[in-house]
Amino acid sequence: MKAFRVLPPQRSWGGVGVSRRRRGHALTLTSHDPSVRCADTSPCQRMGRKKGCALPAFLSVLLFVLAPALAWAHPHIWIQQHVRVVAKDGKYTHVEIEWRFDPSSSEVEIPLIDEDHDGKLSAREVKLLAGEMLPELKNYGYMSWLNTGAKDFRPTNPPEFIARIDDPASFVPAEWDRSAGDGGMPMPQNKRAGDTAGPRKKGPRNLVYVMRFALPEPSKLLSITTYDPDDFIRIEVDRWTVPKGCVLGKHSTYKAEFIRGYPVYADVVTCQFP
Image 1: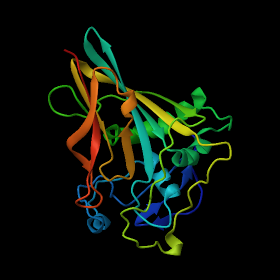
Image 2 (image 1 turned 180 degrees about the horizontal axis):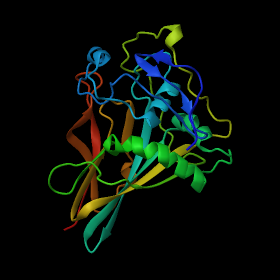
Image 3 (image 1 turned 30 degrees about the vertical axis):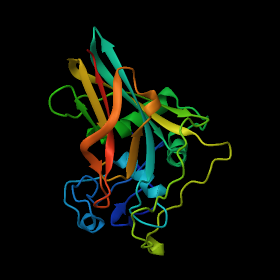
Image 4 (image 1 turned 30 degrees about the horizontal axis):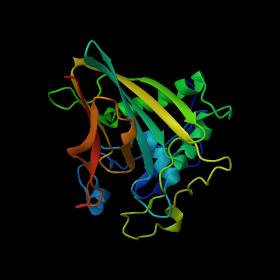
């Protein structure tokens, strides 16, 4: 394993201790702010934070680079999710989720992952990406909840993983205010993160992750909910690609609520055989 090469020294950003590291193909961050998986929902409560929570390193880099002049903007990253199911003998055996990152987020990551800069991800580049990204995602249950008829549960085994670059982009969301919910308080100049990557001259493109999870056992019923309770990452299912026999709805309890009283309920896809 190659050693990490520290780029700039640790810096502070919005209460987060940031150490930028590079291992040939990807940039990650470490954080001493255990903020992102706590139940508190007000911005003031979040600054105190409980212990035992942390943002996945593979996503921390995007939050660091994409942050504008204001701290704690929501969401920083927008993901369009496609859901697919695999069935055999009238029962579901696998569920597959595809994440299409918004073009701005993609332009932060693609140059770091695409080592040879050919605009494609080779098998080696995907393997390196998976080696760093999947262990981090596993710590957070792949940000997903499954249900096959009883209680919700996290995916139990690592997924089959592939990644690619969609060029031209297949997902270009409308512009949004990344500073929404920040209360209008500008960051001190010495704590501002780098600017968002500018538009790509050749047009937008998407970084795409595809993860296929095996169910613990075949089931006639399946639902999946993927979301970030702190709304740093907004994940929305593409309603036009919901599989036949499945319906898209909003979860009754899973929600992001960075500003108390303004919940964003998570998308849930539910599939059922007769």
